[in-house]
Image (cartoon, rainbow, N blue to C red; front, side, top):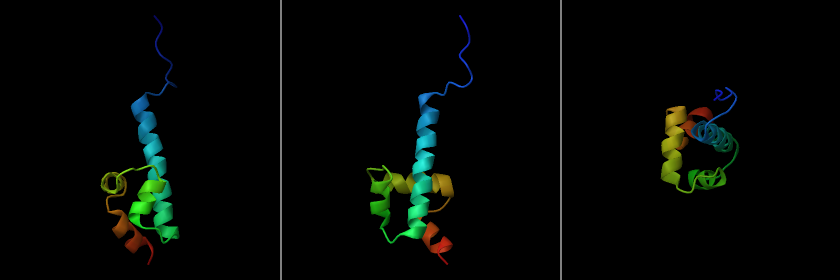
Length: 73
């Protein structure tokens, strides 16, 4: 049996990359729109804003609200 090619990606890493892209889009929306955090969460494929906030914190080490306040100055 041959080994799997290294270019094959498992589904969990695909999900992590997709989520990272959604969070990048969310960061852009936080800085360049007046949408609420809940609206941005929904627009970036997060059904629950508290889960969005948790994921955003994990990626950026701050809440979306704090991110917007800090970077908008």
